[in-house]
Image (cartoon, rainbow, N blue to C red):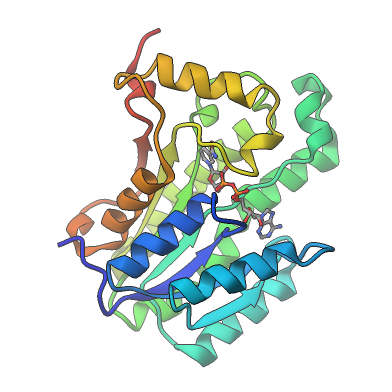
Length: 260
Ligand SMILES: NC(=O)c1ccc[n+]([C@@H]2O[C@H](COP(=O)([O-])OP(=O)(O)OC[C@H]3O[C@@H](n4cnc5c(N)ncnc54)[C@H](O)[C@@H]3O)[C@@H](O)[C@H]2O)c1
């Protein structure tokens, strides 16, 4: 049932081989899906070069730059996908951003711009992407939209700061989207992984400590892997999860259920 053959869709958020989005791309490819990927331009072109190389490994049939803080870039991505496929089955939103400065000050000192930027990139961006993807999903008789959150949305996690409210917004936005597109058989879910060592994670102060606590205080006494998150994404994009929408699914080795 967790088969994705014949399905096609977009994955945003591959930055390098450690990215959660990359594990998702590998697993989706392994389960038969056809993929479109995006990259964020950086001055040295590292993300583009990484994504183009990685894209070859999963036979990505479409690769395009997309900075989700730019409406024109999102529109150009949607136009490109309409030309390329005209229809799609899944959208994976695996990206987030907070200004380093705002992660290093007391939470109450978060800047106005930094607060807005973190929410714009990490949460708001799901809306225009979904708006563009939904008409293509309707042509397939349904679809699956998946994003990545963190337990910092509901608990005050040390040093997670502005990302906490941004993830709370992402989760709530997913529920409102799920209500809107549910009648079209389009499902919207959020995966909340435990801490994983990636490029974004390295921007959070004392992340190594967070990993240590995440493992030691979890039910399974270890942290989760990118691959375990990817397997859950396969399930949520497949027909095996046809009755599940509007949910936040913790993939954290049981950290979130522990009282300690
Ligand atoms: N690593 C963890 O511990 C962890 C835990 C829970 C949730 N998450 C979430 O998983 C998702 C993926 O993060 P990751 O850990 O794989 O890190 P990552 O650094 O590999 O991926 C983050 C991606 O966000 C992209 N991005 C940032 N700003 C962007 C913009 N303006 N436009 C387009 N793309 C942009 C980057 O290019 C990068 O590819 C994020 O939503 C993150 O919050 C991560």
